[in-house]
Image (cartoon, rainbow over all chains, first blue to last red):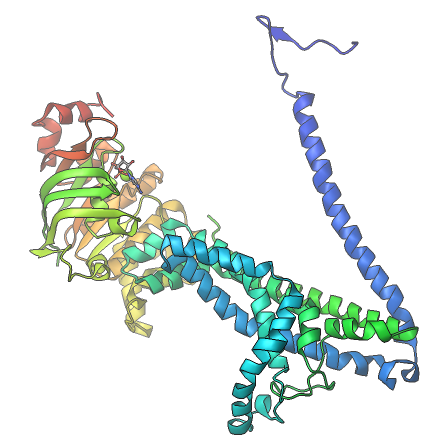
Length: 321
Length: 259
Ligand SMILES: Nc1ncnc2c1ncn2[C@@H]1O[C@H](COP(=O)(O)OP(=O)(O)O)[C@@H](O)[C@H]1O
Ligand SMILES: [Mg+2]
């Protein structure tokens, strides 16, 4: 009770200009926010450190000690390629579909239908990846197989369809389609939110010039959503790069590097390879798997940096006023 | 190329709410018509019914007739997109496309509806429109810079340039100066003087002096209470309305006893 009493005017307490009670809330919040930020950095650094430390034995081992008797670079190369290839196929399919669906929901469909569609797509996000894997093996692969056979017969001069054609349909194309379906919900949800936030002012600017609905989308909605769409694509790509179960289940692996979309001999992906090889590995082979994980970590980082660079490039053309 | 607008028995709705009731008026070509009245009396709503921008709001609809040189804009066969090319609009807040350059903004309307405008011809139109909006000298050295780098007044003149680039017959302006400083406001008022020789201009304004300065004819709208529709009280030559209004409500409003 030695604290000085708060000054009063006409009996009521007044708040001094620097009331400490106000600042306490600020301080607690600032502390929490800073703590959360530091925690994320520490976690990230911890994971990176673990990966690096555990990778060292594999990186310094001779070829003969490593799985398949290859040097680490030769071991991880095809896996990294397969990872990037499958994720690229997924993104190539998912990006236009999710942008289209998001535009339909935000600007074309009647309001009630939009609600139902949005809900269905969110549900898709809740399906476990094992289920997608099963769906890929037992439904999608047999459906796609005849199409791939046709491509192998008629378009085999294109390296992507060079054959021999997989009899099961469990190719990297199928895996890419499964991945595309898996990343569709998050990409669609983000795009939809971004498109809905287009300022009315800018949509009306286009309308008043005599723009059709599609032209409003092109002039106002898409430019406004550009950086958000790129972020959505990067989130989707990140998920596709790291997805394990579905790919491990669907893909029939042959190793090697190939852009062939329809063959039974597909490059595996880093994540799927870890899942499949880990139970049978011991000693330095485990370190080799962890080292491939480190490579995946680095790839994901590079993708994110690239995305940021793209978003920042036309910064001064964004709303600055 | 300016055209006369004939409005008869126009009622404008938002869902079940009638915002504007029974308006009939004639808007003369090659002149500036000012719409004045208290907030919420339906000036913006009425203005937006003249280029069919009202109907882009969900559940909004219009009953009655708006004819430009005899052609009813609300006939079923009329394409609202075509109406909006005929009747340009400038909004209360400057709204250039933020991701486009100054040049692209002015050219935006010319590229619509599969029109192929390219190269020199396009540059000519852009220059002519920017000159028409008294903006050319200020921006001619930075046409490829983003429009968001301009001041508010410059952005509004850019929006006017964008609107006149597609050569409309009519130009609607909804409080075009309300977000601007006095100097920019004067620049736009001067511009209206220049533009009225070629366009039919309808301007909504909150500012009595502005209405008196820029307009040839003035229409006064008001509402009798909350939830009531706005109505046109009277319309006439601007000096007449301001010196000898025919209605008590008009006089109260322009002398500041109301609104
Ligand atoms: N988008 C809208 N939805 C429903 N009612 C609206 C909408 N816009 C305006 N209104 C109503 O219509 C009436 C007229 O508004 P407005 O035309 O903006 O008036 P003013 O421009 O004269 O201030 C007001 O009662 C307003 O609340
Ligand atoms: Mg208004």
